[in-house]
Length: 185
Image (cartoon, rainbow, N blue to C red):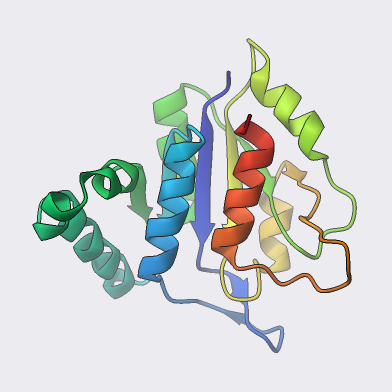
């Protein structure tokens, strides 16, 4: 089974008006995506942010749960948060994933707005092959990743769709659903 990496991208992302911006790291995203990543066997969860103060914020959250009072309060949270690697850029995440897995990961772009893309069954089959290459799923914050991020990807994943036209899941919910589709039983 392939190594599976998750990367949460905070720049370049778009805002509600379509402008390219840098979004803030949220404690909820760290906790909830780490818990999903741990549940579904991800190798690491990268949080990419270019702003030092934001990376320091993430570090303080992690320190609280890994060595502070939070560890005593809920050791299972510490186990999930231990997957998090705070990095400056996607390139840093790719370098670290390659070091961990021994090969550059296949970069898979996720978006609610992509039409088409590789299906979940096909990507799941690729992940389960004995000779599978590592995979890194990119998740965007704000109103999704800027189009330039799609150009960096090797593949785009089909969007998560409900029965109607409304399609605006939180990144936490989308990550959980996608991980379940790729690794769930």
